[in-house]
Structures are given as C-alpha cells and as structure tokens.
Amino acid sequence: MARGRRAPPLRSRLHGLRHMCSRRAALPRRALWVLAFCTALGLLLSWSSNRLLHWLSFPSHTQVRSEWSRQLLFPAVTLCNNNPLRFPRLSKGDLYYAGHWLGLLLPNRTARPLLTELLRGDEARLRWFAKLADFRLFLPPRHYEGISADFMDRLGHQLEDMLLSCKYRGELCGPHNFSALTYLPPPWGECRSSEMGLDFFPVYSITACRIDCETRYIVENCNCKMVHMPGDAPFCTPEQYKECAEPALGLLAEKDSNYCICRTPCNLTRYNKELSMVKIPSKTSAKYLEKKFNKSEKYISENILVLDIFFEALNYETIEQKKAYEVAALLGDIGGQMGLFIGASILTILELFDYIYELIKEKLLDLLGKEEEEGSHDENVSTCDPMPNHSETISHTVNVPLQATLGTLEEIAC
Image 1 (cartoon, rainbow, N blue to C red):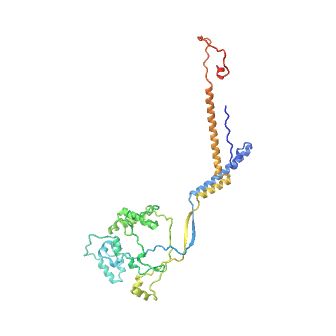
Image 2: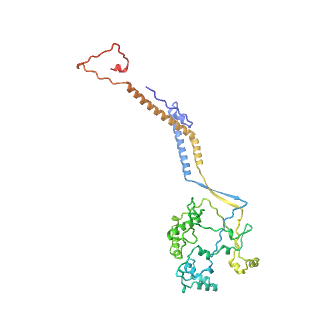
C-alpha cells in the first residue's frame, strides 16, 4: 500500500505563525501565540475598515493660493441699457400689442397711473404718450411682427448710439471690438455640452444652465420662446406672454428645485467688483464735455456715463478643491497597519495563498492515489466457484496435472 503524502512545509515571514504551528512548542505557549495573533488580526481589520469607510466618504479639502502675473486676461464686458426700448420710436401698433409686456399699459390697454405720474413733469412727453395711447379711432393691423428680434433691433438701443468713446489698454476701440452672439440652427449651431447636457450654450455656467432650463420649459409648454431666450423656436406674441409664458415662469419658480438642477461648475472664474461713482460733469470738465459732444450740461448730466473698468491689482486668488484621500493613501495606510500588527506585506499574503494551494493539491493527489490503489487491488483478486456438496454425484473426472504451479493468492484460495 502507498504511503500518504506529507503536507508541504510552511515557509512564511508572517509574525507569530511559526510559533503557532510549531509541534515542538508546548500547548500553552502555542495558545498564547494564537491569542496574540488573533488580537493583532482583529485590530488590523478594525483599522483597515475604518480607513476604507473614510475613503468611501470621498473627503476633499480646499487649497487657496495667491498668484501674481505681469498681465491678466481681461474678462468679457457686457453693456446693458437700463431702458429696454427707445420710447420715442414706439408706434401706435407697437404700444397696442406690446404695451402690457413693456409695462406701459394695463391689461385693458389704458395707461398705467404710475407712468403718468412719472411723466407729469414733462408736459411735452406726457401729451405725446397720451396721444399714442389713445386707441379710440385706431384700427389694429392684421399682421404684426410681434415681440421678435426685429422688434428689438428696431426699438432697442444700439451700441453704435450708446458707445460715444472707447479706449482699451490705451488704444482706441469702437463697436466693432464688441462681439455679438448669433445662434444658428442645426447642424451648424447645435451648442451642446456633452459634460453638463446644455442645449443652447457651449460653455457651462449657472446662469447658462438657468436660461437653458427656462427656455426648454417655455418651449415645451407654450410652443414659443421669450426674446432673451436662445434657440430657433418662434417668439411669443403678447397674448402668449400674458396667457402662457409669464404664468409658466411663475410655476417654474415654485418647482425650481425639482425641475432646474444647476450645479456649480468644475471650473469657475469670478471677479469681485468694487463700485465707486461721482456725478458728471464736474465744474472742470463741463465745458470740455459740452464742446466735445455738442450737448448741454443738463443733457450730459442725465444721459452720459463715463465708465472705467480696470484691475485693482495684477494678482489673482485660486481656490481649488482637491481629493483629500486617494487610493494610494488607502493602500499605504492598510500596508503600514499590516506591517505594524502582523508583520505582513502583499508578498506575505501571496505566500499564504501559495501554501494553501500546495496543501489542497497534495490532498487531491492523495485522494486520487488511494482510488487508483483500490482499483488495482480489485483487479488482482478473483472470486472462486462454490465447492460441490459431498452428497452430490460427481459426473466428471478431474485431470490433475503432474506438475502443478502453486503460490499465487488465487491458487491458495481455490
């Protein structure tokens, strides 16, 4: 019969393992080593799970640093007139259809009392507006352009009229230096951010996200868009403004948290502004401005603005959010605790797995060897015929050879 295979010797640098598995050591000593090893292993698992949970919480920290630069990139500047339209260019048809949207008329197409109070000091303008708002003999046109881009271009303030003088870094500039945004229909102008999912803006910002959300909501519910909204949908008529667009925006504001989700962008440049102002013209500059623009001092004081935009200092502050705990730090912490508590490393763990593999392999080979030995034993031993009874009559003769060959197990049994 074949002997059983001996288990391979365990060769590992794991602390305490050779004392626990040593057959020469006394049982109490081995028990103490088992207790110490289990305690160290429990502490290792406890601290490692703590580090793992800390990594799964995705902590972060904020890094603030101030940097200086010899030249800063000047930001884009948008100039807006507080008056949306040039009222002297309003026609009776414009006031009839868009007066309520412009805040000049009540829903019944009568002048707002507040407007008449504001114009009371200017009798000429008050008479002009009263005549314009008199619709008793007015026949509205059948086809009206509505509040469209052409409407705003015709009645809105143009940069060529607003910008009287301009200098940028000591050089003269003009309206041609100010770019305008033009939204083209697909496939040329499909402005979509694959990262944040905006439909109308290539660069993500909270303001762009908000306008994008409002535009989609108004177009879905009213089948039109407001004047300031991007896209190729038709502009809302004054009736659509009153009956659909304005109520829809109010409803959107109520469910803002559920519909419009505008997260903070990953990269954001913010300019802190400081405002200071003084009324013009001063006594020293009044005559100069009167001569330059050929306007009276009163007109200059009420209609002209001198605007200076500049950097206070050539430095900027960077606020950066970084990962506070990454995978490398997690592995380093767990590896350090493994070395502290059980004196192990990744290679030590591999040694244990290799020993377990060798042990399982030897056990399987022992089982296979025993099955082969039992199979070969069954083939060498054969069964014998039963002996006949003495009372039975033997009707055949047995020929015994002169030289019988004995010695095998089969012959002895038979």
